[in-house]
Length: 492
Image 1: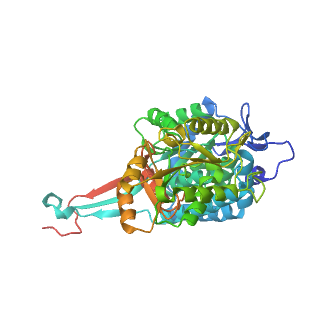
Image 2 (image 1 turned 90 degrees about the vertical axis):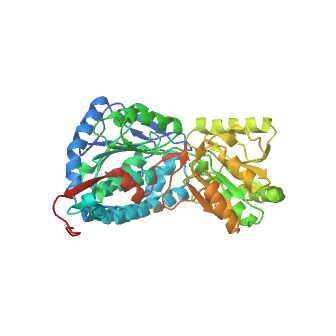
Image 3 (image 1 turned 30 degrees about the horizontal axis):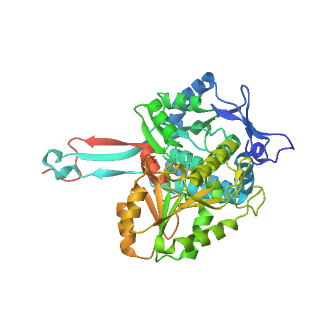
């Protein structure tokens, strides 16, 4: 199946993204077409799951969970290591598929596939380290004469609901960590990237993942809601908007949840920062994937004495970005996910300039492609400041004192990740302590992530941490064994 998904299609022939249910690739029902935002034609089609297909998947997952749980951690790790090597081998082909379905430049897609290879390798490493502990029960009088042990057991059936913006790597995180933990996983793919999702599942199967370990279903929110409510599901991992995350939580009920729900990322540039470096990094990370990242640079706060210099340097860097065909290796910025998304950001730009903001560069839209846009000094209550933009737009605002900018950054319902450019250790420690975010990147923008490092937010940015080690904690349950009258600690 991997070869079928990745082979270059004949002109005008969409890639067929089948579902994978009960160990079979199936194409049942009326196909849903995905129109590539740059090419503006159908590039792939998928088959939304019917209630009958969902029921089959649930039943198979319940029986398959026992098979997967019986695999030794070393066996699961070997599969993930092979998947890492296959991800590197098929890097360019999957990057091309991402470019077609999402308008994401191939250079970004190749970078995403590098991360997929890393993610599977880290998951393999973490699988080998799953264990338990000997509990010091004899430290209390009632525990004397007994022994207690724990181990981390698979949760059973996991549900992974993935977004469109990083469809390969975010699926690798959820599915890789779930398999490392010994679970079977139901995957609900994003409608915007069905073929990319199918490619990652097919890659894992080619690496030796047993058919009992994964199923792939396509469809919209109705399919996701039905899977969330399924009693067979023990844990749900979702990445998406806060509004959809709330719906996921309602549908899931009393299940374990890992929710990554977006952000409104701020980057602070202090007076002592290397402005040229900060401008270059913010330009490169503010518009990668057309700004469609939960930690993409959205608000840049610059100390007032350096504000004008930064805006000039930043806009000059932005103007050097190459906008165009995502299949062109030279392209830095391709299309947004669809024309509606680009139109929404264009509208927000117009609202801000009408409120007195200055449009420094960009603001021009062609279909789903929005030229990288810089807006200077918008009002604090402008929509592009208060809400998640998720587009090719960065706002630059001045600040005077650290107290002020920390309070301003915290005055948001989001709290995922922030960036800080400074060389002052006191400023760094204070920002780390006081900023209400899940992570702080120093001398880098908000848009930086290492796949083996804990990642997640606070407030409306969700809860739980998405890195394989922490995800395995969510995907497993602690089981305790108490041996009465048998002690390794002594009897009195």
